[in-house]
Amino acid sequence: MNPASDPGHGDSPAAWTAVTVMIAALSVGTVAFYLQVWWLVIASAVATLVGWGLGFVLSAMGWGVRGPKFQPKEHA
Image 1 (spheres, rainbow, N blue to C red):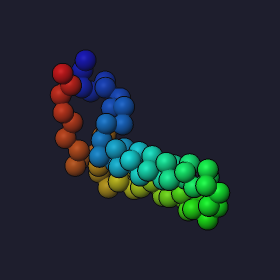
Image 2 (image 1 turned 90 degrees about the vertical axis):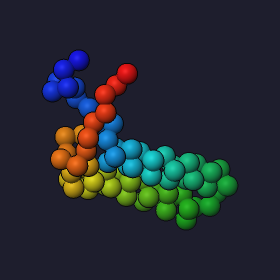
Image 3 (image 1 turned 45 degrees about the horizontal axis):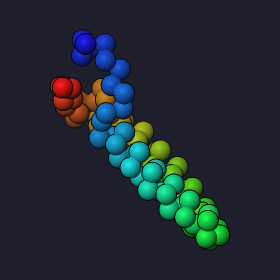
Image 4 (image 1 turned 180 degrees about the horizontal axis):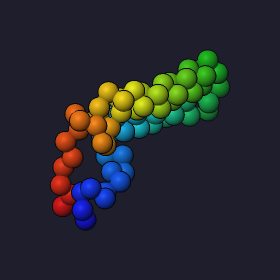
């Protein structure tokens, strides 16, 4: 596949960081919901939004798929 035509599929530090933060927040939120710890459910929802925003901020700083700080690796 031509690297210029590859859409990237989010394989960048910005995407990995955002997804990791969001998965952790949603995991904690799920357990908190089960245990009915409502303040932690709300905090987890806020942390999920922070993770989403973190992806955009890191991408704008150059760590996204097409950013100057990201060096893509060849796929096997």
